[in-house]
Structures are given as C-alpha cells and as structure tokens.
Amino acid sequence: MTFIERLAMPLLPSPEEGPPPKGLLAFFWYFARQIKWPLVLALFFKVLEVAADLMIPIALGYFVDIFATPGIETADERLALIQERLPVLLGMVGFFLFFRPLALIGKTAVVELGLMGGFGNFIRWQSHRHILGQDISFFSNDFAGRIANRVMQTGISLREVVLTSLDGILYGFIYLVGSLIILAFTSLWLAVPLLIWTVAYVSLIIFFMPRIQRASEAHSELRSEVTGRIVDSYTNIQTVKLFANKGLEDANVAESIDDFNFGWIQVMRRSVTMSALLICINALLVVFTAALSLWFWMAGSASAGTIATALPLVSTLTWFSGIMLWLLGHIFESAGAVSEGRQSISVPHAIVDAPNAKPLMVQEGRILYDDISFNYGKERSVISGLNLDIKPGEKIGLIGHSGAGKSTLVNLLLRFFDLEDGAIRIDGQNISEVQQDSLRKAIAMVTQDTSLLHRSIRDNICYGKPGASEEELIAAAKQAQAWDFIVDLEDNKGRKAMDAHVGERGVKLSGGQRQRIALARVILKDAPILILDEATSALDSEVEHAIQEQLLGLMTGKTVIAIAHRLSTISRLDRLVVMEDGRIVEMGSHQELLDHNGVYARLWALQSGGFLPTADVVEETSESG
Image (tube, rainbow, N blue to C red):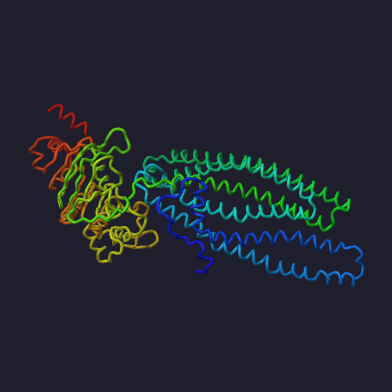
C-alpha cells in the first residue's frame, strides 16, 4: 500500500479503553481526531482548490478589461498591450495548467484513496469490538439486526458528515467569503446584495436544519427497526414456516416499512420547503446584482471587467448554494444516523474487569458460592443468601423446575451477570477480581440450545482450541460420535466434510448433529471446569448412551456442574443439589436423597420416561400425601 492509502487504516485500534463519548460533537471528534493529520492534509488541498476556482472570475475580469482598453485599434497596439501584460498572463497560464490541477489531484487522492475506505471501516471496527464486549443482557434487549445496522451505518454516516463538510460545505464557505472580499475590493456596492443574500441563506439554514436533523434521527431509528424486523423473520424462518405465518410476518414488516416511508416524507417536506425558499432568494440575488452592475457601468463607476468578475461569482454562488443545501441535508441526515447509532455504540460495558485484574489460575477446581444474592435488576431476589461449596473434581447435578435458579447459578459462575451481594470463588479467587476471558477459558459448557457459527465444521470445533491440529480435531469429533456424519457432509458450494459450512446457527444440521459438534468443541477445549446443561437432550437413545460413556471419561479430573431434566442422566454424579425458588432445599447423593424421602424422592417416583414432572404435579402429589 502507498503512503496515501495508509492514511486511514481500517483496523486502527481504539485510542483508549471504554466507549466513545455520548455527546454528538464529542462522538464525532473521538473518531475524527484519530486521523486528524490526513484531514488537515485534505483541508490544505481543498483550500488550494477554492483559491484556484476564485481566480477564474478574477482572470475573466482581467481579460475583459484588456479587451475593452480604449484606444487600442491596430494589431501592433494589441501586440504591445499583450507584451506589456505578458508576465501576468503567463502567471495565469501557469496557475491554471499546474497549480489548480495539483490541488484537485492532491485533494482527490487524499480523500478517495486515503480516507474514503479506511475512515468508515475503522469506525465500524472499533464499534464492533466495543459492542462485542457487552454483556449478554445487552444483546437480549435489542434486535441483533438493529445492532448490526447501527454498527454498519454509523461508520459510513460519520465518514459522510466529515468528508462532505470538508469537500462541500467548507468549499462553499470559503468561496462565499472570498467572493465578498473580491467584490468589496472591486466595487463595495456590488457586495451589498451578496451580503444580504448571505444573511437570508444562513437564516434558512439555522431555521430548517435542526428540524431536518430531528426528522432524520427519527427516520434513522425507523430504518434500524425495519432491518431488525426483517432479520428477526429470517433468523426464525423455521418458526414462521412451521406456523404458516408468512402473512403475519408480511404485516409486521409492512408496518415498519410504511412508518419508515412516512419518516422519509417528514424529512423531505422540510427539505423541499427550504429549497423552494432558496430558489427565490437566489433569483433575487442574480437580478439585483445584474441591475446594480448595469447601473454602475452606465454611471461609469464600474468597468466591464468588474462586471465580468461579479456576475460569474454570483452565478456560481447561486448554483452552488443549492448544492450546499442538498449537502447540508445529507449531512444532517447522516448525523441523524450517527446520533441513532450512538444508542448502541456509546453504551458503557455493564460488566468490566476490575482494575489490575489478573488471569484466573485454576489449580484444583474448587468452586465456592459464598452467601450470594442476585435479582436480575428486579425488586424481588431470584437468589438470596445461597451457599454452595463444590470440591475439586466433584461432579454435582443441579435439579429443579424451570425458574428454580439452576441456570442462574451457571450464568453467575460465568460472570454473565454481577452479584448483588456475596462472592463466587474458584480456588479462592473471587471471579469479580479476575479477567473475564481467563475465567471463561477455564470453563467449558455444552447447552441444550446449541447454536453454531455460520462457518465450517472445522472452524466450529476448533473454536474450543484455536490452532488445534487436524489429528486433535478428528479425535474430538470421534469422541463426540460426530465423525461418522461429518465425513458425509457437503454444502451447496461443494465443500465437504470438515470444510462444509453449517449455515446460520447451524441450521443445515439436525439438532443431534449440532449437539455432537458442540460436544466435540468442548472435548477439544479440555477446560478444568465442565458445565453440562442437558448436554445430550437432542440425541437419540443409542447415540446418547455411547456419548454418556464418553462424557464420564471427559469428566475425569474435572469439576463438573450438570443441569438435567432427566434424572437418569445425573443420578450417577457425586452429589445432587435440589433447588426451589432460588434456594437449595436438598443435597446429597442419589441414594441418600431417595432414603431421605423428600422432594427428590417424589421427583424420582413421578418422573415419566426419565423427565422431571411439572411443578403442579409435584404439588398435587405432596398435598395428597
């Protein structure tokens, strides 16, 4: 890459930790200051370009005055006049042959080659990296499509605001100021109509642009809503097809598109009104300037060259003023998109590493829930004062109905949420005081709802251990009973076996196949702490039995927490923990709990096909007993 092409690198790292500022101007400056010197270089060439363009009417007036010089009638007299003005004429030729092209080429190279691509992309890159560090609840509370749209749109919109301001608005401002100065020097009275027009023009901008910006912000929000709804339909296409609700989805998206279109109309109403008023004041400027020029020429107060300078200046300004208004409208529309994008990009991380946090060092794998309380931000606690000590290498099973708090315990261990009170310790280290990445690298988990990345089988399995050898990948796949179906896979692009892509969230595979890939990923990761959340729920009985034996081997030497709705899958664990309403109500081995004849014994007696009964069935049985 050349020097110019490296002016704004697309993978530029963030200048500081934390989110970009929330204020709009501060948000712009946060990104623009990272490439301030390339922007200064572009500004330099732009000033040269405007200076060159202002020289055109000056040169035109100069030539007209030469042609209109009185008393020049013969060819010799004309030649003598040209020779007298030759240094100035040669300077003008050189200016237009070299200076102006150099300014245009320099500006074009810096903007098009240096800034146009990298500027928007490094904003996207930094925004994506910040959002990827958000906690789980951030993504649970919004459309994934809307978040992605904000990341993509904010980068290009912020770039458009900065570069359009530099390339268009700055040009118009300098040209306007330069025109006023030139007219004031040639004929002060000819500058008066332009000065009055400037006041009217600025008044239009001050009145209309804030209204256009507010309408543009609302329109940008509606654009993200449309994207979010469309992506939501595509992501859940199986549910849409299963319930034959295409019409319902059409209505849902149609409503958002209709709102989006009306939002655009609101922007255009203000823009068209402003443009109509501008057309009127532009017409008045041209007419009054022409009339004044004629008046001063007839009175002998202005030369033909002065008029030849003034009229092109005014004509260019009226032409460019319309372009400037369009550019300003585009800028405010883009600024609206940036302002809307800040709603996701400028959100601080809710869960952050403590200052000077150290990596988690797992020596034995002891897990201690020490008097913990948690409420998901609600008034009523989900878990209150819970204590649980899991010994190194112990295999425990969490049992309870939905909402009992089993998954909450796991999510808190992974630090997907922070505690209200108490502490969770691994080998004596408070997990809130260690680096989050090191914590999660020490824990392997297979969930009931297994989602895969829209990448190859190899990439998905290797996600557990980046850089693993082919032999390690194949061994993990075989241990997870996945190798037999992997070798027969082929996607729609002809990629086979380990190179076959699985589709978004792994939709090209069956539930059982996805779960076996997830198991292979965990086997390859080989973390000291293992969490199994109904890890074999999507498998048929024969494959499940084979994998259960593999899991027993995988558990060796690890601390294991298993959640299951089928008691038969966890009855062989060292200790079972029975939970109700965020509390531990029973604890012990399978046989000890049966002998105790409490909640677990009733669940064991009532289970159907190995599954836990519903809470109302247990209550009825308890009452009848």
